[in-house]
Length: 286
Image 1: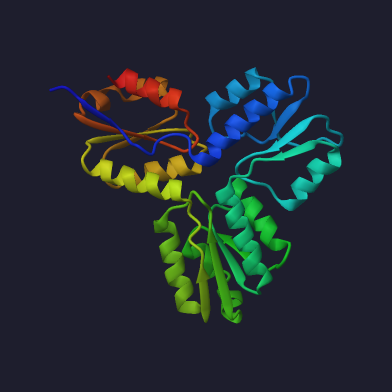
Image 2 (image 1 turned 135 degrees about the vertical axis):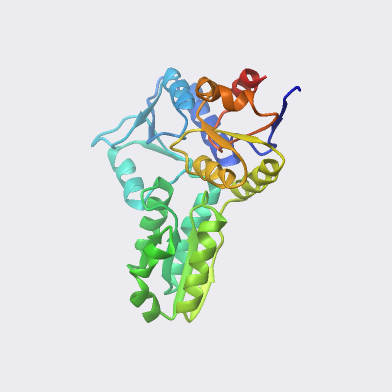
């Protein structure tokens, strides 16, 4: 029987990533004689980083004492301290923080200013969460990051001592991570304010992929293993049907027998996966 291959509507670049990549390229084309640097990988995708490097857009991991040219803040956002360092080094700063991430930063600041004990639901080591945490901590020391109830339990005494608890969420997190934390906080706090800041693009991507998984005997998730939203997508789908997570079409060779034995295959991709990478995967399967 011929294989049926479906591609999710919400697959590939989200608005924030598309904006960051297009703006970085435009900056270089409009300023060919200027250095254009990005602090950290602009997005979690090797193909895109290599393409940017070929255009002369360089990734740096540390801010030099003296900088010349343009320094881009990527879509994950940064701490106020890092922004100050970029300016102090003499760079021309271009802030490409995703508008949805900015909203989380602003909400965390607002809660901290209003005297809430702030809980950031997310992975402490993720660059987006580092930025949110740093922004909130400018206004209060009562800020913690947790991705599970177990991690929060060590702060139970401090949380109980506070009248008000406020929650914000890393934009690429899952509802199944947020919900148990909210349930736990409800049981130990007097007043709880929850801002569900999971971005709409992430929520729609996850919701659509779950529906596709129910009618597929194989789901293929395309995108970087370093991308939070992509790995979360694969985690969710593994509970519904057979799922493989690949970075690009060359990795399909490792899953030949699984692909050959599947009739209904659906493909989705993370927010930092370019269309060209998705198309190569579809071509190879067909």
